[in-house]
Amino acid sequence: MRGEFYRSLGLEPSGPKSNRTSLAVLDYHPKARRLIVVDIESRIQGFEEVSADESLLESVQAATSSAEKMTGIGVHGPLSLPPALAGVGEKPGAKPANQEQIEWLETAWQKCLPRPKPFVSYLQRPCEVWLRYQTQEKFAIPEALGANSAPITARMQFLGPKLPEPLHEVFPKATFSRICHSLNMSKAIQRDYLDVEKGLRTRELFFESLSAKLPQLFIYDKDLETMILNISAFNAFLNGFMQHLVYKNQFEQAPKNFPQKASWIYIPRRTIKWDDVF
Image (cartoon, rainbow, N blue to C red; front, top):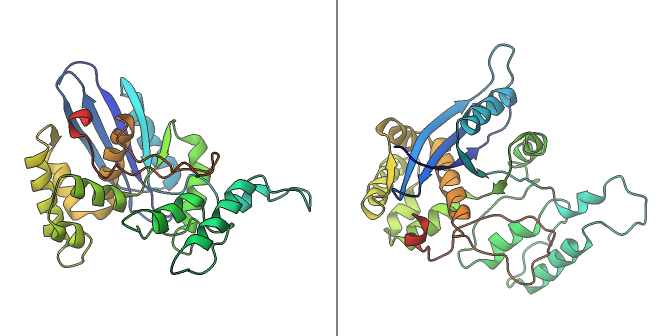
């Protein structure tokens, strides 16, 4: 398809020793009002003398260098550290650099009913607390330095400065949930897409419904099969789609009382204006 296009990338990173990292490339053609999934690269890993990080950076570089214009990269992984860690290495007794965020966490905890375990400012970030406790859906997002997320958090602190900007942290479960809600998809699709037994057929049904409701979206058969079979590739697609929604200003804004310097996790509006997306 000829004409000007805008490229969005979706990155689903795994731990550095895993082969589950995936990258999605989506091109938006404004004149044709089409969004095309150009490529889904799954199982990005190191080989011989090339590390997994080098391999990933090469894939990102190849995707960005061939683009006319970039909207950015949607990354499923913490791009910032919990607020208390910003002061590590400072003089004892100094006021924490992110005191506003630390105080916000304390206030948010006090307002929770029922009250969970106290929030920990060196493990949790305000954006995670907001997603888990203050959104209508109460999304079950892991802590940035929780047992499962810590290796990915460490990897993204290393890789983040090497990736082309802008970078936007996203959460594919929330993206999926709100796309389904906005398009009135069945609750069975929202419930079962990660299920071990029902997941494959459910993801297939999701794309069938998505194609019917959003004919402006085009996906090649080979990439469609990859996304149905590989949950990491599926998430990479959601991350790239969310990056396009960020470009189109179809994301939920931070609440008024949210700390100004705190990082944000981008999720769709509950009601997406689809005419504005394409």
